[in-house]
Image (cartoon, protein in one colour):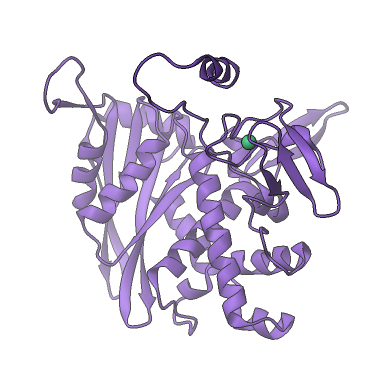
Length: 371
Ligand SMILES: [Zn+2]
């Protein structure tokens, strides 16, 4: 137990979310609990992780979640480990929600995205069809998040673009999407900013440097017979420059997101085509998607992201990277245990709003914890 690496999870505590400030001490080695000296509360070592209040050993949970994140059917785990089906499903849902928090904390940070590709998967569930829309940053192969909806319409595309926007800096950004018209409207409406200095509802101005390209495939008898590539917004020179910096050579395509869709299809048991492991509820699919997506980002080496290291005597070694390493979010590949034990810090404490001047004690707290 190392109190220097832990923060206080109490939202009402002035020290909440702050690491290494000397306010945490070990409360009990036996019960594995810490104590915060500022608010006086104690909390378990596993608070904020997937393992909080689980009675099964960590190793079993990690093994089961690893299997779930790689497409193992729930029934196989039930038989192999002798667990109840509801237990396995609750661990899956818990890990999915935890992964979504990790994703929102680490991946949804503004960065220069370069090229983004977006696409949807049609998912057959028990008694209904749903759509799963996802986006990828091409240069680092980072999965930027996804949205599940019952209809493939502008609301789905808007929700996906809002996720992408949280990951984007206002720089040159090329979108490669399929022929669905709702994308164009969603991109144009999402990537806008209010013009400052106005009263009332501010007018919005579109970001500069947003380029939209479409790849429309024509099918006959289930096979692609023709591809039309068109630029909806922006110039050919801009598109060529962005393609060169983000994917080397090549043309406008949606190959990267289609490859990622294939990874998701193979890793979420309920997405396997013609399979029998259908999902019954949309939240199950949503949690499964976040579990697989975050494991893909943080725990899986991507072959095309490796870089050569040149050693003396003309020897060469490959440095393998995960999408998260390539995006500069971490410096090593995370194990699944590390991902499930990652504690997302709560937002820093804000002093309560009161009329008049703050008291002396409050001033001391603000000076200590809000600077
Ligand atoms: Zn505290």
